[in-house]
Image (cartoon, rainbow, N blue to C red; front, side):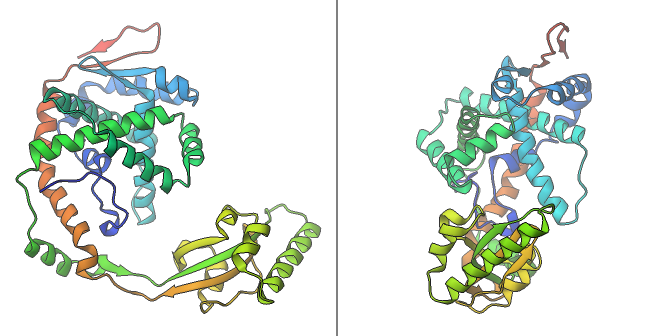
Length: 364
């Protein structure tokens, strides 16, 4: 059975299998001993990242660790920190406790070492990255970010570049191949296991009511003068009248909206009530498909909303989530094997902290 690390958008309650998630979950395997031995290295890396400018070139050129002679760059740690921060944000929204930054840097360091060791092992057994798979991952990420320009801007904000991302994707593919060929080829998930999981977790497959809508936004800030607010509301009312009189809403949004969705006709796609601010959410959910709301004021400004489609609350069928469940259960079977491999690789690894200029390196 082929084990896929590729991120899935239809994952079971955000439990999709990805190289970053699986390896980060395995970071405790052997890494507790590593972090105990390299506490000083962690402190130096933490201070280095804290003081470093976020320019991409600085991040790319700064080596913070070596693993069996291979460099780990500040950009590697930064990339992993961004992924961990996203996971923490999701956990915090579900009521989890947000860790402090030093623990996140520590976790990113551990994960960077894990990743480097797994890539080295993949190369040792003769694997090479699949350029088509790498190109597909990059294309999916580019589309998810809304285009190459937005992706590059997002990376640059964290001191990263497209070259960093491409290198990460190549390494992701190598690790995926390593797991497929060395750990998971004989593993499988049965239909009985999939159905048993589905039947035992009914709440995981509930889908809340959702609305697909478009909007036209006239942006206003908290400190916008009252006189300007009146003018913006008047513009919103005029736009609403044009829409009610029969002009195409998407065309109006493209012409008038000051929000980021203007280029796609104000299309917001499907969203749940909890995903939108009030009173926008209540206004959208009060509409029937085709109806247009009164002007709505939020912290973003003045909106005119048109409902496109409604989707009732329900439960996803087993057929809809079968592949996601299978991937999740396979993750659980691969995990202990990956634990064992990482522990073995860490025990034999030569991990060296590379200090800032003027300080002697520390090696254990």
